[in-house]
Length: 123
Image (cartoon, rainbow, N blue to C red; front, side, top):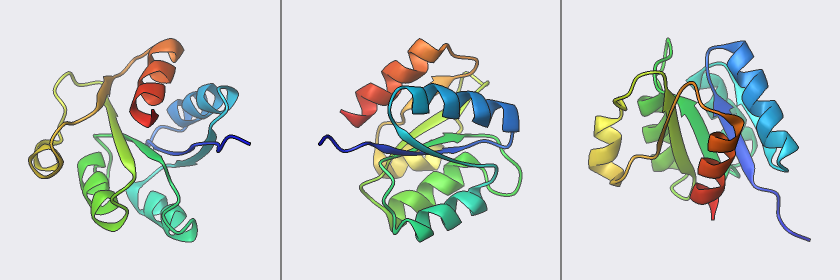
């Protein structure tokens, strides 16, 4: 039996979370969502870091997506990260300096674009 990839989606907009969860779950991924970086870290801790991909908004209150990704990569180095934002320039400068290439998708995106990016990153 093929392993289902586990994706953790983080965005402070509930509607965005619901849409992305629906798209990715319908594609066959196991999806969990969080409305904040802190909640995402709690979910990851409960799952013992068993998360294949973190899909995070860059601009969020409390903890931004870059800070969240930096904690994830330090704590769970095998977890891949895909940033998303409505801004054309990714705000993940420190992340890029530490981890090289930054995977980034610009909002709004189509369901096909999202599925294609996720599949590419996980393969």
